[in-house]
Image (tube, rainbow, N blue to C red):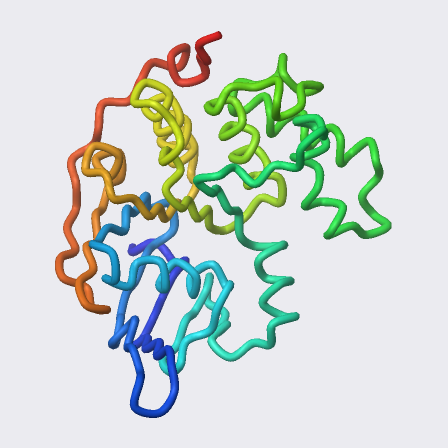
Length: 248
C-alpha cells in the first residue's frame, strides 16, 4: 500500500508583479511527496525552488492551484491560519540558523512550544521535551551554551532540535549546510539522514549535488516547472558516533 501523502500539489502557479510586468515563478507544479520521504529540490537561480519552498512551508500562498499538507487543503488559508500551521505542523531549518543571541540552546529549542502553549503542557514537560530533542541531535552536553559559544555545526544542530520540538509532519531545510565547511556539512547531513531513517519526512533545498546525494529523491526545477524527478541511491551514512560528533 502506498504511504499517505504529506505534500500533494495540483497545478501550483505563482505570479509576481502586476499589469504588463509579471513573472510566473511557478508555472503549474503538480507534485506528490509521501510520508517518510527525503526529497532534495534543486535548480538554478530563478528556477522557482525558493518560491515552491515558501508555499510548501506555508510562508506564501499560490496564485492558483491546490496545496494539501497531510491531507488538509491549505491553499487559501489566511495569514493567521498559515502561521498556526507553521507553528504546529512544520519544522524549519535555515542556512543562517535563526537562533536568538544571548539565549541558551535549551531556551532556543523551547521557543516554539511557548508560542503553542496550552494549560495541559507544564513547564517541566516543555523542558523535558526540549532536552530530549537536543539529545537526539547529539547536544545533551551543550544545553546551557549560547550561540556565540558554539560552532556553526552545533548551532545548526540546535536549529534542527528546534524544528523537531513540535513533532512536525514535515521538516523543511533551506540550504542547511550553506554556512558550513564540508566536514561539518557532512555531519549535519548525517543527522538529517538519521532523522529520516527514524521516520521523518524531509524536504530540502540545495544547490550542491553532494548534499542532494543524501536524499532518496531529487527534483530539479527549471523555469517554474519540474524538469526532472528521480529516485536516488542511498548515500553512505556516517556511523552513529560520527553522526553526533562535533569537532571541538
